[in-house]
Image (cartoon, rainbow, N blue to C red):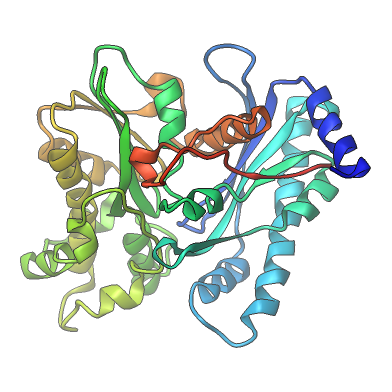
Length: 378
């Protein structure tokens, strides 16, 4: 170890604060969730939150980078720098609101913005220049959480089930935590049995893409537009025939598979747009309920988080499909639906500094447990 690296390690160890920042920017491409969390007690305490919406120019540029494009390497690095600046600015706003100084924060856990996720080909790519974020924020940054798990043969995702297992498990009640972001994923927490989890399929991603295309809106508020249409059974079946949905976990997915081009390939062209939206909502509901029926036998309580937890039409569909389960938002567990993932990445940063393994091999399929994340000292 070089003298400089040794000094950096000492700096990390000497900061004994249990205040961590989590930054999450997910598949929905809506913006940045930033949280300040105190881990000094047995249950995480959320001290402050901040949301920074993406501008349309940045959102469009990120969508382009999900597929091969001209000069994409240069654009990728420019956008990584832009994201780092946005992350740093959002962090500064959060700390000012909480009246917390830089020196009181142990580290930032930053997921970064995923633009490619190809575990079957041995890689994943999240944008956000972590070295620049550490420089701009003045706080140590932990990022690149997925790559080590993929190197060990895993999917690299979902990673949040480890946090659910540590914090939200109940000793006698079978819980399932369902995150409905761009992609939906679940964590199965059966009492006295192993935690499992996986990506179910599209959550908000296709609904958001379709309402943007047809109505120019970022999302279908409360699923109101979908509720005014009629499900198209033949189209729903085409969507449900996707092989990914029938694969046995561990599995993960993203925009690499589920995107507007994938949806258009299933359409005949004569469908009423509102009926397509109704079918997409039914599809998102089905991939979640089917996953719970198949892999979470005996589930008693289902807790929803992510943007989809606000979609009352989707939630009602889930209640109809899962009548034997009590369905609630994670707010009832003290974890706000909009902030749980960011809190989890703050926790993942803490575990990295502790040197603890946190990838659940039953979830990701990795050959062995790994310490996840790369450290960029301030």
